[in-house]
Length: 383
Image 1 (cartoon, rainbow, N blue to C red):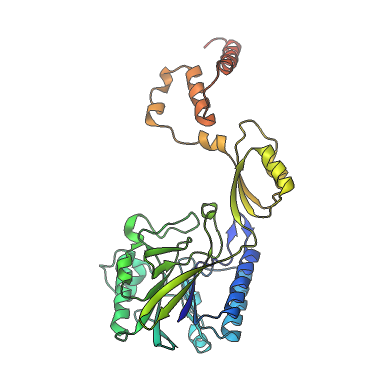
Image 2 (cartoon, rainbow, N blue to C red; image 1 turned 90 degrees about the horizontal axis):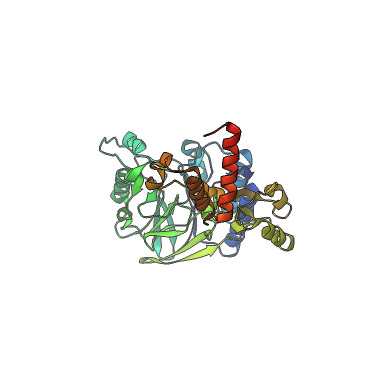
């Protein structure tokens, strides 16, 4: 059996005030083309289909058009689970009606586990979708006041699966959670504080494959058959070095065989560029770019309106930063903070200059500063 694992589509996403609908449509067109040429036995979307619980109209239409073609025309069984960004109860609407067409939508957890059986040449494979589950939500359905953490809740939900699963048959888990040890990024919404949100990968050891959603970098979670597929696109500059794509998983009669990462090609990349203003300006004249950019300027002097001048060649700059200012806002060590009143203004300025420029104040610069300070003191009539 060939299983295509995706997650974290975040349809309707806004990135630094830019709607990404066009970029997401571009990726979904690639996905649809792949499905048409090499159809898998099952398509999985492991949560965060939308970016917010009440998605914009264009996001709903984008998903509707995609699923209509994949499920109704290509006849590929498709399983969706709700993530922490999704309106889980809203996702459940009409889900039982859609099952006969091969679309399985599971928006929220329930006491009775959802079991989806899909056959291949080696017999049945059972899929068990578990949407994003909070400890409070799990306590409501069991009920059990001992469920304190996400791990506790996931453990109880998986126990209900083991109770109904046919002996020796293959099984795949689809869920949306933070597995302990995973590498996160800035664009993922925190599920809580401390270790209470972590789920141990040891809970998944009896599954042939575990399709995870939530973390945006493609990665294993304790074993090769427990994986995050990552997000459709780079949704923050902390993801600039990620390679986005989807995971093709193969099962045989005995279970997991291997996986293959299939890369997406974005309409516009997300990149960080660092350099001096004039160098970046000249480079843009030769190699203009429509990528989404964070520009980090290394210049130490004042620059007149850098954003609008750079946007002539880089129209999708989303952020311009000055390295010299970033350094100035870094917290000082306790030794630098103590007893500053006992130090001279000249010494304090020399330390400040060294911190923000990473260079020592020259003798000539120190003389200019002292002259300015003495002039001000004279104008103020003393100390």
